[in-house]
Image (cartoon, rainbow, N blue to C red; front, side):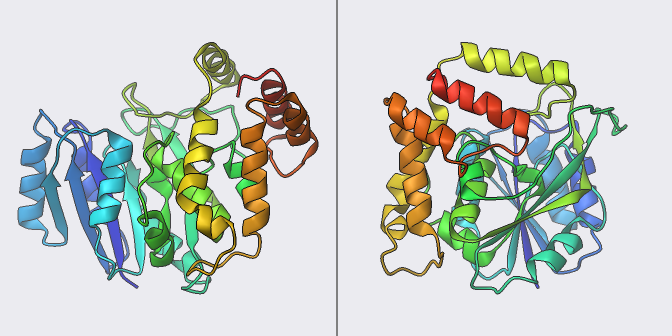
Length: 312
C-alpha cells in the first residue's frame, strides 16, 4: 500500500532536518513526501532543496503565506489520487520508525470504500526531544460526530487517512475552520470511521512557537479555559455552519458516493447545536441530548455550562 506524506513548512530551519530524517527512517518502503513551503524567509527552502536533491521520494514546492490550515488544504487539493493512504506531518516533530506501518496496519482492516481516519496519542517532548511530564490525561472513549462537533480529538501530525476520506475532504475546501485536523475528525466521524490509537509513535515537540500546543497540566488547562471564555466566542458555531453548508446534500441522505447509516441523525444534531446559539430552549435540548459531549465527563459538564450561558 502506497502512502503520501503531506507536510507544510514555515521558517522551520531549526528542527526540520530532524523531522525529515525520521520520515526517511520509517520502516515502510512505499512512502513519498510532498512538502509545501508557506513562504519561509529563513533557510527552510535551501534545506528542502538539499534533501530533495538527495532523496527522489521527497518533493517540495514554494507557496505564498496563507497559514497552516489553508496550506494543508492546498496540499490535499494538489495530492495525486493514486496513493492508498495520506499522512500529515508537521515540521518540528520526530516520528518513531514504526509510525506509518502501524497506521497502515490499522487502516487496512477497513473496507477501502469506507472513509477511515487513523490518529493517535503523542509523546510530549521539549525542544531537545526530552519527555515532558504531562499531568493532563488525554482520553478517547468513543469517536462520534456528536463529539467532533465540540471537540477535536485528532492531532494533525498523527493523522493518516485513506483515499476515500481524502476525496471527500477535497470535495470543497471550507472557507472557515478552527483547525484543519478538526475538519478531518468532523468529516470522518460523519461519513466513516475513526481509529484512535492510545499508543504513541511520535515525539511532539513543545518549544513555544507551535501553532497549537498540548495542555501539560491542570493549571495550564484552567488558564486556557479562562482565556477562551474572555475571547469573542462563536468559532465552533461557525465551523459547524460551514460543515453543513458544504455537505448539506449528503447530510440530507440524498443519493451520493458517501455511505453513512446515520447522516440524517448527524445533520439534526448539528442543526440543534446551531439553534442553541440563539435559543435557550435549544440550549436545554443540547444539554439533555447525550449525543453532544466531550470525552471526559468533567469536560462535558463544563461544556454544558458554557452552552447554557451562551459562551460556546
